[in-house]
Amino acid sequence: MVSRSKITVGAVSTSSVPPASDAVRRVQYSALELRRSRRLQIMLPPAPTEIRTHRLMLRRWREADLPLFAALNADPAVMEFMPKLLTRAESDAFVDRISSSFEERAYGLWAVEVADGGDFIGFTGLNAALFEAPFTPAVEVGWRIARSSWGRGYATEAAHGALDDALGRLSLEEIVSFTAVVNERSTAVMKRLGMERDITGDFDHPALPVGDPLRPHVLYRLQRPGVAARQQ
Ligand SMILES: CC(C)(COP(=O)(O)OP(=O)(O)OC[C@H]1O[C@@H](n2cnc3c(N)ncnc32)[C@H](O)[C@@H]1OP(=O)(O)O)[C@@H](O)C(=O)NCCC(=O)NCCS
Image 1 (cartoon, rainbow, N blue to C red):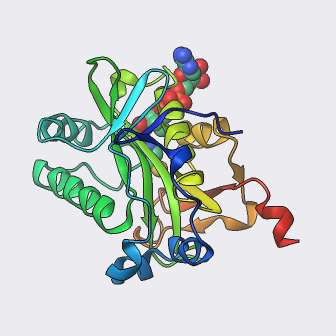
Image 2 (cartoon, rainbow, N blue to C red):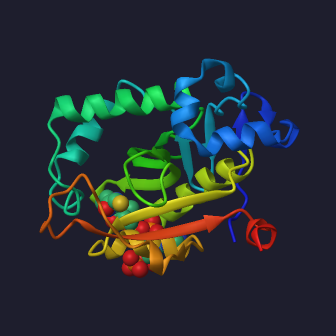
């Protein structure tokens, strides 16, 4: 069960944002269509400026985050299950792509900081999964947190905030998450969020070479309450 967290849209709470129409809901599933269609983009409720949870603030990225994020992307512990460490330029380019996602799709990976003046600790949020796989296109929830902030429940708490936004403002019917089979800390977050493993959904990530130990992936799904009943 996804817990509720305070979501701020400027000064307006999401409870006053009208529910998305069926037409909007359809395009939300097709991120490719959404990206190509400027006309449909304006039908989506805009992303809030920030999402607050009990201890955290999920917000848009700032210039000051860039060196901290680059350090995180260069940490072998954080990047253990990623294909490679990122250079500063690659890390900055990643943030550019995240910012574009917020503009083009009205969702993205939030910069996460500990509330009330705390540190930037990484990202959590939504991302369009557009690579070739049986379950794509889809919207995934993902996380990358600085090593010094692991073991405090921050990733799970931030993901609850992002999922509330996905199910509320965006009215998504399903959010997926996936990771390398060997990334047990990440699958533990998926389980804590109440996501369910789709045993038939295991897949080899096409961006990784055959034989790479990170290529086999597990797939977890979180459906909007009531979706399964409607599909029967
Ligand atoms: C995956 C990742 C985000 C998980 O971080 P995490 O800190 O283990 O996960 P959570 O935020 O859910 O924290 C849970 C832990 O905090 C503990 N905890 C401490 N205080 C807590 C609190 N107040 N509330 C909740 N949990 C708390 C829990 O007991 C749990 O500890 P455990 O790991 O010993 O069981 C982190 O390892 C990471 O960034 N890895 C690198 C990036 C990565 O692999 N991303 C996924 C790619 S697909």
